Image 1 (tube, helix red, strand yellow):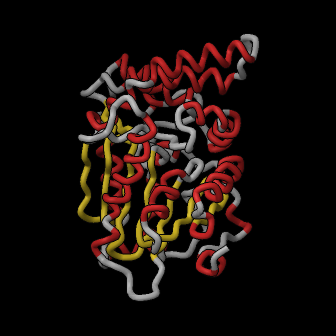
Image 2 (cartoon, rainbow, N blue to C red):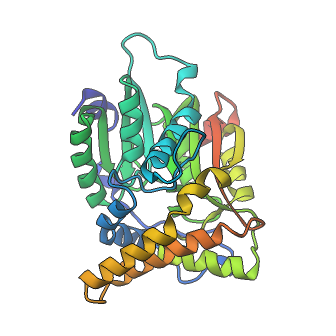
Length: 334
């Protein structure tokens, strides 16, 4: 492994994943609490199932732009990775000669976004964080096949307490993973991101967001069914999440809807999910495990939830780590 990871990104043994407390979840959004153990069990059990959505394990929706075929899902999924890379704006401050730029994927899945970004930029190194060991094993195999294993490090840790050194990352992102932190503000996630980033570095979060603290009855029911089925404690609310960013020393906060950008890939769900369900039920003789059944249910719920525009949006949030001030200093100290 590269020296940059051996010396700068060593994870102490005290960083074993833990299930944090769940403050800040309104009663109308809370069912039986979803814990970090639930999330880890879910992703462990359905790990291989995600290959039906993307052979490269892009475990997120795609980003459509002019020139991309909306019928080709993988191209849109990779474009979402690149949209994250553009939002990091690493090119705004080119590295000094001989200096490495390091970025962190907080909740990486099988590392697809990091693989895309280091594959596009030979000067970039990435550290990915997940508390699901099987995802790191899949990542290692795909890194080797892509020829980028020497510029990626995958660590097993809770992304709200990574153990990585403070103020060393040139950028960080969470692509459909911030939702797995507790509470509607995702404050523990935001606090750790602020601690990891250098002053002036950017955080990019792409995820679903609740637009109101109290969604309508049907939207609220769909959100709870979807969240329970994908082992998500709750989606963040836009207001609470942006407030947490400000409280932890972030500036230039922008919330940009990607609703129409992801719609073409989301429309792949009905056919894919139905075909997948039928094939897997046939192979398992009608006896899918509970998490695998929930995985299929959540796929349909995600599409339905996107229809409630007053209550829900799929968006990119970008923010810049403050270069100074009391808020930034407090965040770095935590």
